[in-house]
Image 1 (cartoon, rainbow, N blue to C red):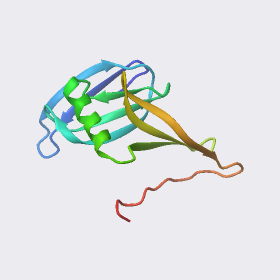
Image 2 (cartoon, rainbow, N blue to C red):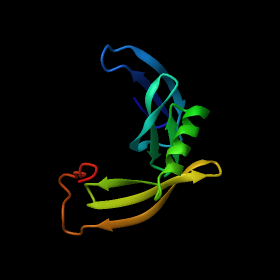
Image 3 (cartoon, rainbow, N blue to C red):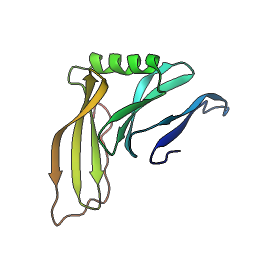
Image 4 (cartoon, helix red, strand yellow):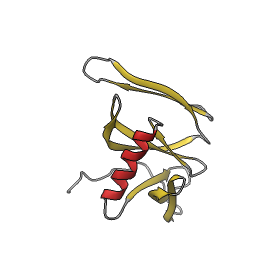
Length: 130
């Protein structure tokens, strides 16, 4: 769960419901996008990068091992990682490049488009390798 200034998270085994890890952490602003990252750290099978309303990034779990895992994933991809925010009300799409920065991670806006007089109803992403 999340509020404007904190997020509570749990890593739960989907087969038996066992909670392997959980915590809460302060966040800089509300979460706009959750980006799953493959790989494990501690009791979690995957990590998440959170893109916030103020365009800052944080990671879940919020420890040094998970940050190292995310940085390694970002370093192993030739073009880096991208995420997109879709504003259905204003029919606008923004694209961000997620990269390693001095302070940890950074999101840079790399594109934006608006569909004036159009309405975004649904967004679907193709299956990988499609």
